[in-house]
Length: 171
Image (tube, rainbow, N blue to C red; front, side, top):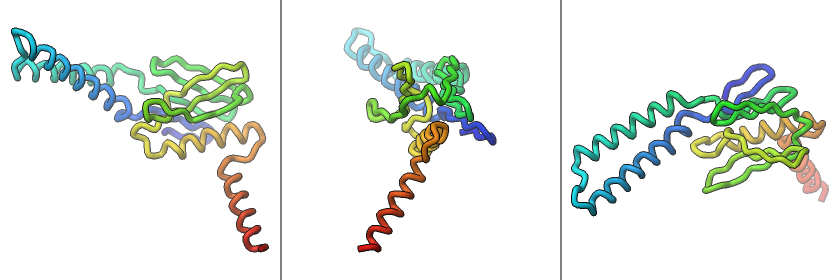
């Protein structure tokens, strides 16, 4: 996450990009090996090794060539969503009607609903291999709430705890 005085960037890490690619290459190589094992010409260890090296080279190439900018940028006026292909979309905070966290295949991602009824899922933050996911979502939500003139979530939680503590002391 890159941070300037006014802007915060959320980007996918190299591990978040590489691990799914490596898993896909390993799965594809394994399936190819199994498929060829039942043919008249099964794959030998040297061919399997060559497939694995080619797949590894493909993963490295994909990481080098892929845009590492996928994610989101929070500015005082906008949420800038950047797709995996580098497409940028600037959304005014006033046009955001809701921010949710959605879970797909065990991975949590941020879903942003717009006043037009459109919904988009941000590439980052994403919970896969990101121990700070909840803090990043909190920062995104707090920025949106502050723009709407509402208290950030952390402040609301502090108020609830303080009120509960005062109620407990009053009894």
